[in-house]
Image (cartoon, protein in one colour):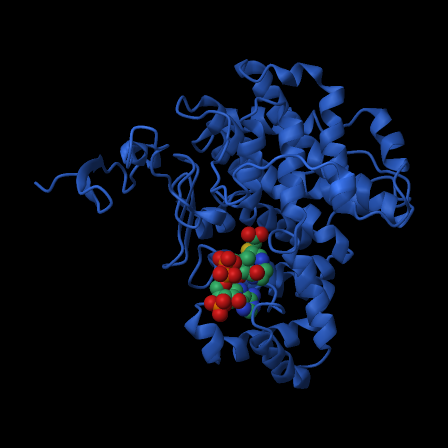
Length: 430
Ligand code: CMC
């Protein structure tokens, strides 16, 4: 039997060390024994952007980036998108198993009955400028929620955690919809408990003077599937923010505000917004070759937004599902004129050596924006829609981190390259 260990020779001293291998990893703290002298701090790993460092053990989501596989708790994303619904998937992600009929009924009841937000939230929302970005409003309001639920500080109380999880999953669509209505100058619409999670969200967004909002079933289903596809994605930038900030033992609303801020960036959840802007900038199919040339010559400065991924070096499985979903939506809404540009852009890019060599494929954000736009969302709302689905993943990652006895406050090391020590010089002598 081969030994599950790694033997390292330190060529500075000639000493050998044996480091255990567990789950295909070595512990970088084991490197600390490798020293040139007793005063030496010991060897560290240097890994900016966590390119090859596992920060946790997790049982939530599995990705095989080379094969284009994504599974939540072992279930393939394709099966969940086809056969399940968002609330069931949220239960699966958070609780670890598919629910029984009774468990699902209770889960739905709890989430449905926590959708209303405190009236003061409306006043808070009103304070935002008329052109405030909805993701900025969403992020700040999530942080503000911690001031409404002071019991959320009891993070080691199972029951309290469960209530905050209900509240978070229930209230994110309400807050997202309020942000939208504020942007549009419309009165806020209250939740309707008779509707599904996605149906109620559409109600809070688009209800006008009709006594009861009736969502289009195809659009309701499309939105539900989009929530499923965005529900978790293992240790991405925002999940890492949720875990890292949560590791200080702050309440989950504050940690989720940090995760939401991370998602806002154009390299993460802000990419869907950037894709739409890019497609508009290109404007027509004949301009695509010139655009691709600019990207290639830009040496990373100008990117083909919605392409590439840190983990996927193959077609993002979510992009495949979304591409198909777009057809169902366009049947109801009419085709988004930018679709032809997107399809042609994908075709040209996938044949181009630059993209082929770097294994750059469409990611989840490439087509989702086209659907969101057809559903009448302004582009600024796109990252907020991402955040609604991802809340299930964030809370699951947060709880897993809290219950992991190996976790401590997240606190990376650094390689210090600044001055060693120097004496202060009074300003007159500088
Ligand atoms: N267009 C053109 N070139 C690209 C792109 C792109 N979209 N993505 C990567 N590259 C190039 C990059 O310049 C580099 O080239 P070189 O080796 O010559 O320096 C090479 O491909 C490797 O890229 P990287 O920047 O080292 O890869 P990364 O893992 O650090 O970045 C990424 C991953 C998603 C940030 C990046 O691909 C990107 O910026 N894509 C566009 C933004 C985007 O669509 N983001 C959404 C990600 S999926 C949803 C989510 O997680 O929120």
